Length: 301
Image (cartoon, rainbow, N blue to C red; front, side, top):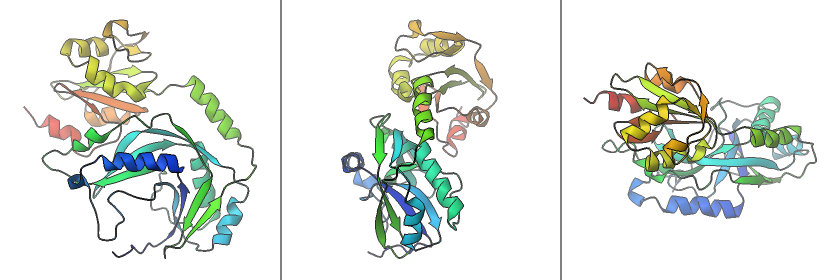
């Protein structure tokens, strides 16, 4: 097995071992035939679960990095549901929300020479690399789960890895006051997880309703309780809702009229925390853009 030669150094946050075990357990439930492996062993099911803080760092001097991080406290993060990145392979991942990680990413970029291979920082935990399947292109949704949603973790150990593969642990034990952290906690108490719930019309336009809170669990509720055309129409025709109740008759309305979008792409431009779409009797989570998703349905008679 040949190790991949990287062009830059990387800073990663090491997961608590109890969480890393759960991530590996989830990966183990995926059939081997769906796993995309490579000769270097960099894909497949990762064994060293982590959250990348910054890739593209030029320096290999660990003391320079330690000096920059000397006053940094442990990082707080909140896990979300499983989603995917779609590129040459399908990357099944756990979404991560963290102002601390975003702040540290910016700190590294500002103070060290870096090449931004991924300018938009999207922290996540990779579960597994999956093969593409032309016959069943969205089979990976079978492996989506909310079991990690809402879990709060503390990250107190970073790993600095050079292009040659030398890895050094860095403990975060600084005492810097984190006002942003307190603001984040307060914000989470008053703000819900928002979503748009849409229904594709015969002309491929989309009628949608806004849901203000608790949307992390909406997909299961939609599939279990809003599978009939009558229930779906009742949901979107009545206007915005506070949250998605299991009983369509008990929906708490916020007022307003259904929103109309001329196309799937226009619908996707109205970004919220979560996005769900009903097409030809099936509910889909379309929060993360899937290339060709809408056109695959629009081409059908």
